[in-house]
Image (cartoon, helix red, strand yellow):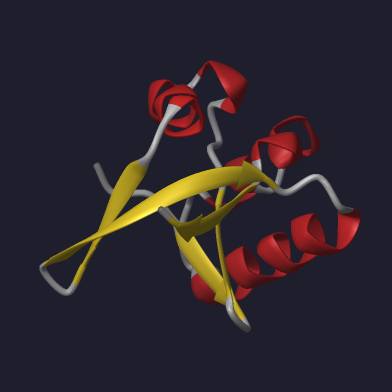
Length: 90
């Protein structure tokens, strides 16, 4: 399933516009997951990004990377900001 990923320095972040009830969000928090990058499967684990700086950097990254998407506003709603996750190697 495609998800929006932004990279800031050494950190990779994801967020769901559907909030905490999103299936992929719940499954990723429950256990290790994986990203497929250039055809290669990369194991990851998700850690809630609760600090305001990480949340802001993620939002800024989405604005820059996905500025032309009709879904951008949904990813920036205040109600979904707490679903920001930092991805770490599993």
